[in-house]
Image 1: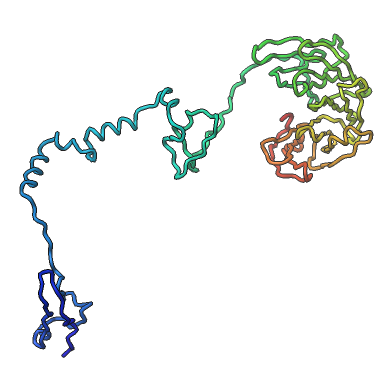
Image 2 (image 1 turned 90 degrees about the vertical axis):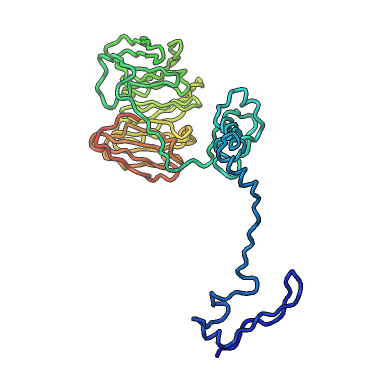
Length: 389
């Protein structure tokens, strides 16, 4: 027989006297199906176990509840119900649109549709319209819309007699939306906004061919290179001839401007000259590092570097400080191409001083270079001759 484990101490109920828990005898223990301790015996009940405290219900409340379930007017008086007038008023205030007057009268700090626990700091002086719909952490799964490139030209310009020479640079677009085109010994300009073509300059000589055109970065001047070794400088607005520079009898097929007034141009003999057009004695330097025609020339990276491309498949890089000295030295000499390098452009959308160069028909690649290190970043094969960027 197991010992009795039920506590036998006395206790008091709310009603008064002392009582003792009755002690189970041996016969009652034998009649149980399970003889376990009190903590595991599910049939065991203490002194207060099993009591049910059922509150008394007022009959009048049951009668009122029956009437309330049948009467819709009584149901709609609570703001917690879905069809209550209070619910409808709150819903109409939430979904109604904000007028311009409401936006101006909104207190600072009030923001609607903000998906973040902490509000963004308020920037003084900004428009208040942007506080109505704000998403601080937009979904990363939303894809950006792809740019749609037009498949048909916006404008078409007749260009009879345009030279079919890969080394020429006879088209240029100014920052003032003016396009210059050379047709043999004539230069035409086309205003993109007004669609008006104008004869800019006629050299009136069948022996002279225009081989290069280049607007200054502000669009105020136009440099016209000729096949007789001279480059002419004009004012764009008045078509006034200002001055000319010469490099000998070699044609000038490339020219480029720096924003500080420096004009650099290259000829067929591999020579590069730099002039400061603001000065009366404009000559600054002469560079002879190419063995073939200089057909690509560009000031890049905020005019920090002068990059030249040639028919000898070499790309030379010079700093601005070296270009204006008497004996310029190359910063880099890049021989990554296997054909003529004509297309040269900087890449402002890429981090660092990155430029792109491209080779001719036998090359067909676009290579990206870091001018801070002189190393190639990447290369893209096009399998075609690239003329311009």
